[in-house]
Amino acid sequence: MILAWSCSRARWRPFTGDPEDTPFRGMVHADAEAFEAAMVVLDLGPTLGALNRVALQACDFIVVPAASDIFAVHGFRAFAAALDRWRVVPTRMTPIGYVVQEYTRHSANAPSVLAYLPEEYKRSVLRESEEVGHSMTNQPSCIGVIKPFHSLQRMAEEARRPKFSLRPADGAVGSHALAVQEAYRDYRTLTREILRRVGVGAPP
Image (cartoon, rainbow, N blue to C red; front, side, top):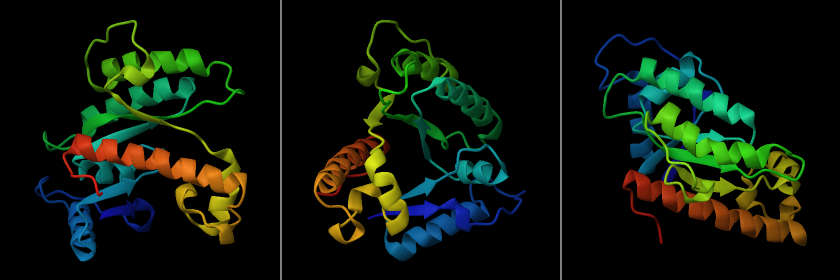
């Protein structure tokens, strides 16, 4: 079982003790044991504030989300700078790759930006040089590309369900039902790849 643990319900508390055992990490472990979860996913907001700092310091691995625009490049750089400042335990906060939301036809600059992301991620986050000439999806740092599924967005918000688990009772019928099935396949593939990268066996 994978437990999705939202940081919006936690309150930040300053910590000055052993970095190997923070109060925040203790709360996460307690929840994991209660649900018998093999892995906990922390769903963080797009900020580099105090709460996210404490949450990230409790993480073993980090997946970086990226939009298909120029802000993703700046986001990599800002995240890398924060990673250098915040890493307390060397074996934690290990970036395992990034996930891109697929661009739409309205994103005119998206193709050129996406082509630049692998190089920027390697240089900023991993502090490595990147060879030129490879496509984005062939890069080992790119975990996957997720479609936005705009047609399911409002439906998911109203039903308070993930897009990939919407039901006919939520309005997911006809073409929407097909989109839900596609979303389920895409997110399952993404989840299996993340589990592989962190060394946790994927469910059958």
